Image 1 (cartoon, rainbow, N blue to C red):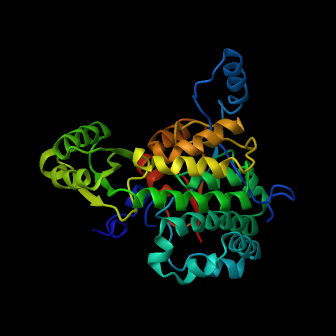
Image 2 (image 1 turned 120 degrees about the vertical axis):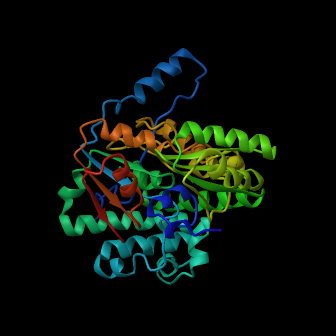
Length: 366
């Protein structure tokens, strides 16, 4: 299997759920944020109520957009120096370690890589590292820089970081949920032989066609899981179907390249369905509030203001394609002026540059 990060930094995003995606306020210092939904309701009254409660962010501003990475962005050594320099960042890791029952900072700094890359460790690790990056920004640039954000978004797992930043969910609950999410997704991946392949150099219509042919040839399921940007899409499916994609993409469809991703399974497809109920259970135990700023959902590329809708979308996110391409188009199509990427790596910044090379983006690295 090719180590895709060595080939192209942008390919990191394709792994979303893979290898490497100051006090806040005295009361909402460690909180997280939300999304929106088109879920069918049982009565017209309920539909009206949901529509009213969930439409507060329809005309959101993308002037200053905060972006958070997803699984696959982690690396051994992250946050070591940061926690020495930013005391609030170290506090976050101490709190998280108490919840998880192991020293999370040690695993981030020392690894080993195989352990940090595991789905159940990397998910809370990236979440905490991303919130530590917020503390770094706060310490270096002041509260004004943090308050300047007009909207937030996160790549797959990064949506939880964005929600926490927007005070929709507490930091403690964010650790709890990302830990449970990582374990549930790992268990779902272990139950069936599946994987992901990054397809480079084709438009999404051709990738859809590629998946259809691969499904027919293999007799098994595969589909686009991550819509990252034009020419960079990740497909998820059975290992057999993934092998067919890798075999025929270049000779038959003229793809530039394919990269089998080092991930646990076919994330963002129905292969992750067993993880949904476990995620719903843990989400039922946490409080989600209306975000203080719009947070863009990966499921429909829209911001949501109704906490119950946000919860439902977070549960379905693990089986739904990531619409990051739509999110970037929506962000840049508004009053966008600048972006910040907060957390490990430069994945979301790299994608942004694929849309607009002149787009201003500041990386707050860990």
